[in-house]
Length: 412
Image (cartoon, rainbow, N blue to C red; front, side, top):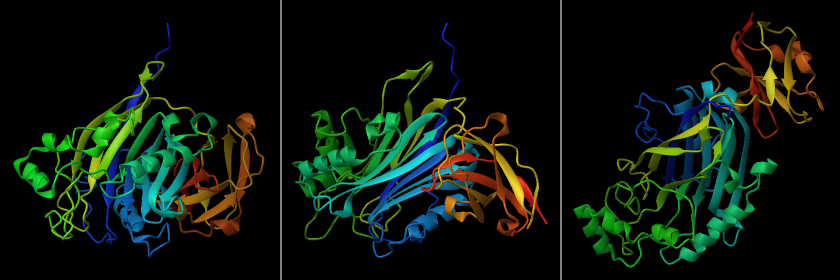
């Protein structure tokens, strides 16, 4: 009889928002569903058309605002991937961090034949409780007539993004793929006035028969084998900024569902644990008027292993340390270390991996020494830090988490 593998559910909150170059000086409670008593395990946020004049990454106003908002609620920013106006950010509950590893990111430019990052896709992938998942945030070619260009953009993102894991080196190799963004598909063969009449009457099912994305998907031209939840909200584009009124400019662009969230998973099982995505909601947030788009969000539950495989690096129990006194830590490894690996010292309530208060480089070439492990020393000069609760994180040069310690005290 096959041994049963326990499974559990992890909840993801997905958000796509074309912010139209606006600043994040607004209340994010509704768009992040912060009033919900059931907090997701991961927040996966895809922004498009962020302010390109601020080319910094970690300190971009949107990254800072989201980190301040979620960091104060027990989340840690795992990764930010920026490609000009496209930004993908993933946060995890601090309690989930021991089960998150192998964080990577990629970006593909598709604007102006691949030379410009105004269009394209930025992705973040990771392993979570033994399952691997990837979040792709895309901004595809604009304008109603450019269906073929959108399909080419989609294919370019799939073809060009490669990852280190040989078993999961492509986007579609992942157990779970979540693809969201301003995908720019419009309503075909419909006038502005006709679309408004359908919206006013609530004839969304009829309106969706004109949706280019659904038409192309049915023809097998794009997003083949991807799923999308039932759309029950009005088109999310194009509004006059600051209003809930569809485009009143001379162009009178036909309203459309440009902003979408789709997913892909294989119908496979690992023992008794089956890959499964259960969508809990799929909605827009019309009260946000900073852009000509409305944000769209979805919450999903995915199946993962109840007992995940061991982390690549396991810290032995860390006891009390003292300020300005040399201290050692012991850890075991399941793979060889590299000279660019490092161990960061973080306050217990840290919000992102760039908030380390001290660090040392890991031992180059260290391998698992069994129960003895690898011994690393933080010299006294590296522990001139305030007293308080801390953790140690083993990271690669690209801030990919490989292991996290228990929380411990540094005393005066």
